[in-house]
Length: 143
Image (tube, rainbow, N blue to C red; front, side, top):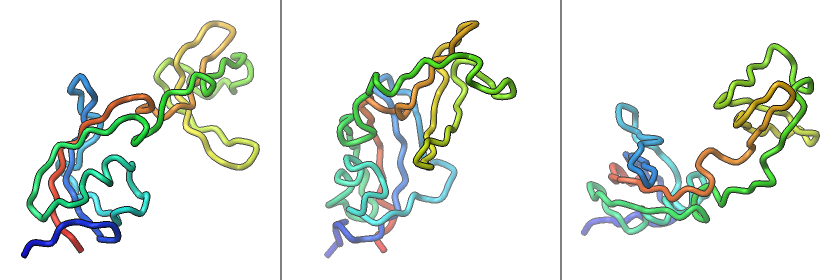
């Protein structure tokens, strides 16, 4: 009798994550399989649920809506700040990823999305927020 993956199991998976246009955004190819505890919140909920019921050696394609991945895009998380508010040694080219420490001590990842001579636009949304994600998954091991 084969064992099916269930919440609480330690699972090891190989995966390739793609955007709707087929662009690969992450993959375990060439690395050790991803190890996590099913149902524990260690990975995005939609992928976690998509692996439940698989047996070792099974492969499956799992499509995950934004609500079960990194959430919807929130335009309120895009801020425009004066250029002089950012120290000169910090790069502000569009696409640059920055970290900022908030007043509560939490670190937030930001991406520079636009820059003018006077202002810089910073986006605190997760880069995959609002995106439908598709994963090709192989269950390698149930611990």
